[in-house]
Each structure stands twice: as C-alpha cells, then as structure tokens.
Image 1 (cartoon, each protein chain N blue to C red):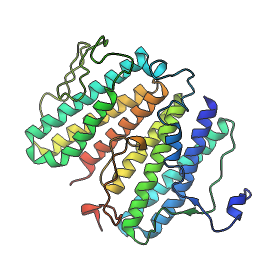
Image 2 (image 1 turned 60 degrees about the vertical axis):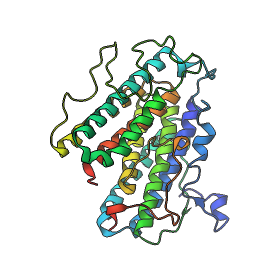
Image 3 (image 1 turned 90 degrees about the vertical axis):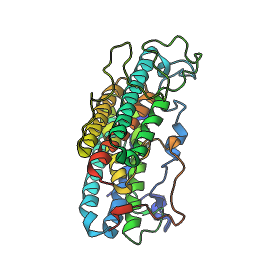
Length: 158
Length: 195
C-alpha cells in the first residue's frame, strides 16, 4: 500500500512540477485580464508541489526534482493557446490526484480529493465547460475540439 | 542544487509537459493494481462488499435527487433548459456509473436496501431508508435563485461524497472523488458563469 502511495505521490509531484513550469508559460502569453487568475493558479500549484515533497518524504521517498524545462504539448503563441494549455495542465493534475486518492487513506486521501476538486474547477474556469468524470481519463468522452485545436472560449475571448 | 540528470544533460530532448498524463492512470486503472488490496478479483474483495455497495447506492440516490432537481428547475424555467442540459447530462452519467452492474449478481435480484437502483430513472431519491425527496419542495421563481439552489444542492452532494470516500475501497474512492469534483465544478458553472 505504501509503495503504491509513494509511486502515486511521486507522479502527482511530477505533475505539479510540470504545472508550475507550464503556468510560467501561460502567464507570459495570457491576456492581461486573466493574468491574476494565472498567477493565482501558479501559486496554488507551487503550494501543492511543496506539500507533495513533504508527503513523499513522509512516505520514505526522495522527492523527484523538476526538469530544467519541459516540451510543450503544442505551441503557445497567443492567449487562447495559453488558456488551452492551462486547462490541459489542470486536467493532468486532476488525473494524478485521482490516482492518489485511490492509493492513499486518511488525511492524505482527503488532501488528494481536495486537490482534484480544485483542478476540476480550474479546468472549467479555463475551458468554460467541464467533463463528467474529472481526473478519470478512461471515462473521458472523445474530445470535441475544432480541427485547428483552438479552444472554444465562447464569450470569454478577450 | 540537485545534479542534473543524464537525460537533461543529453541536450535538447525535453521531458514532455504532459508526460504520463494517460500512462499513469491507464497502467493502473481499473485493475486494482495500485489498490494494494490483494485478491480483489472481478467479483470479490473490498470493491464489492456490503459497505461498498451501500456507499454506491447512497451516491446513486443522491445523484438521482440532483437529476430530479435539474428537471424540476427546467420545468419551472424553460429558458434555462439549454444551459442546464450538459450539467444534467453529466449527472445522468454519474447515476449510470454509480448504479453500475454488480458483476456477480443477476440484475435486479436481491439488492439490499431501497431497491430503487434503476439507473437513469428520473424520480425523487426517496427510498425505504427514509431519505428526503430530492431537492427543495419548490423551485424559486427567480432564475438566479433557482440556479443558486441547484448550485447549493451540487455543493452539498459534493461535500457528502468527499466525506464518504474516506471509508471507501480504493477504486470507489477514486470514482467518488471524481464525481465530487464534477459537482463542485457544476456549482461554479451555475453561479459564477453567466452563459
């Protein structure tokens, strides 16, 4: 049980490292009106990252470090792309916390469930719509993206 | 400073930002691989014991109550139908997942409890355990208040799920955390976003 939990915690830590990096990119491209939101998310992910480092140590592991840099899943030349990246980051974070819920108990499970909830809400804030089972990619509906891959921001396009 | 890994030192190849996004969960998903519970085969083990079934039934009942609340809200405010349709659809999917088949039993036979486990039927969640019917007695006349009531119901249900998942077996806990998160996201959409 502990080995599975440690593995899941390391995976969550890796996702938070990536989120912290990714939000740095988001912040650099996102429109002014949403910059505070990006900043707030960035700060929240740093806090979660730090908490997971402690968790990994508590579980007897060595926290895996962040990479020096990450390859972005797609180009982020403008604000809509930045928003889409933010949503993707949250979706990935949601998935690792769902796994951590499964592998943990007690207070750590509660924490993981709370982090999953936060990620789901942020994902909705960025995308404008939600998914039926946040954090469970095996239950995701086929993506309904426009062929160009740009996000469907609707009235939130600024 | 931690030493750079050989991979980082190797040059321009970078770790993908979304690496493992699917791999982590697919590898362990659904098989109980990470559950740490030995012997949890398809029809035995903690995921299928009486307590787990009770938790699922309760969660399904709560979702049916939510569904009823959505339907009555739309009945009172037809102009909200479009906006509420995707949220209602999600709640219906939750019911399906939570009511899901118990693999070792014949469908519909010898279920303990209320027996109101008919998946997507849209009725109030009152069962013989005496749960209150779903939702408020009346839907507010005001659009905003009606949405607020729905959001409150979603939030309460979400909170109940977070409490319940503490004692759930691993896979069910993961599912409950997910539907709890979906409900919290619904509460946000119902009150913070005006589409």
